[in-house]
Structure formats: C-alpha cells, structure tokens
Image (cartoon, rainbow, N blue to C red; front, side, top):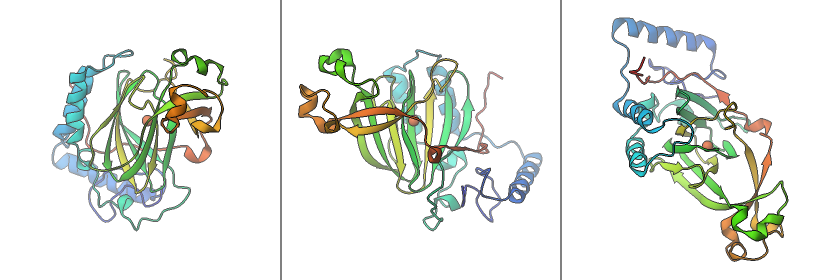
Length: 284
Ligand SMILES: [Fe+2]
C-alpha cells in the first residue's frame, strides 16, 4: 500500500507496511525502536487496550459462546472509548491524509494485535474506495469499532427458509437475507455488534475516506473448526421471482438475495506486522 502507515520524518513506529515503503526505512525505524527499549522500559499497553483484552478473555470461552448482554455492554463501553492512539496510530499519519494518493489497485490491509483460539483482536486498514466485500462470520460474535475515517456499511442476516414456506423453492445458489444496516458511519462512532444469527452477520465495508476498523472476533475464523469466511454478491429482492408472496414482497427494500462467490483478486488483503502497543497476557 503506497503512502502507508509509517509516520514519515517522525521518530515513532506505529505500523509498518510490508509493501510500499522501502525496507531501509523500516529497518532504521526498528533500530530506533529497539534502542529506546534498552534505554527505557517496554512500552506499556494503553489501559483501554489491556482492559479490552482482559474483558475478551473473561467473555469468550470458546466455540458456542455468545456473550451475555452484560458482557456486550462492558465490551462496547471499552471499545467506544478507544482511540487510534491506543493501537499506536494517529490521524496525521500519511495514510490518513486527504492528499494521500488514491490508486485504484490499493488493497485493504490487516494486522493482528492478538490471537487465541477463543478470540482475536484485528485492525483493518482501508484506503479511500477500499472494499471488504460481503462476508459472513459463522458462529461468531463480532464487535467493530471504527477508529478513523468514514465508511459505508451494509449488512444482512439470513432469512430461515423453514420459517417461510415460499422460500423452499428458491434456487440453491441464492439465499434470501434481510437487510440489517445500509448506512454511512463516521469516526468516532459507537461500536457495532453482530451475533451468529443476527445483528448483520454478513457485512460489507466500503471506505469513503481512509479508514481503520478495530475488530474483536469471538471466536476467530478457523478452517479446521468449520468457521471459514465466505463471500457474497447481493441482488435486490425484485431481481428474482422467488418469494412472490408474503411480507417480503411488501417490504422488498428490506430484503436481498445473496449468492456465494469466490474472493476476487482485487479484494485480497495484504497482511502487515502489528507494531503498536502490546497487550500483556498475564497467563504467560
Ligand atoms: Fe467482518
């Protein structure tokens, strides 16, 4: 990603992009960072990031865990108060500047702050016009906090065919979903939460300006545990004749047909190393 996430001319490393910026700069910055560790102490985890980590560890106990409303409130309260600085970012970094060159082939980048089998903390960096296409979160509860930028979020939940007899004849490659959100969000804004079967389990992010999203996934994706990520294309409800009767017809704007698709090449993501403040795992 060009115009990446390293603060140019500064003395602090936030996040380093593995593509774009030259290796020389990265090495130099890392040396400065290491020297500082020797002179002083290891940077402390910001209170909010550490509180988020500890709260996640109390909340997510493995597959099948759906947080109680108290746990959801607690996590949302922590996330609502989080700022870019808590993960080593600042809004004046080159990546977030309006004059940052926008290229059509800029890809979304992500980094993992913490991962264990019960939950993960990740950051997604979207350049302006960057898209994370419609994707699902099987059996997962996900908290998303937009830390920087402005983005459009569209989300759906599946309509259960067994609850709607007229849907039993729908073709196997299409599945009816109810629109949950279709709005523009600007940071700082409240945390959004999706659940295994509600809240917008299938969602799409489209960046209007460069954005950063902090995601808490409980549990994380896992191919071995049958929680792989699937991607979808949506069609408006009126595009197909299935489900011609019933409430859906009257509220066609609230529904869409989803078709599973392969991840497109230009939607592949780059991965970078997380070099922001670390959480302290007191179990270690
Ligand atoms: Fe997602």
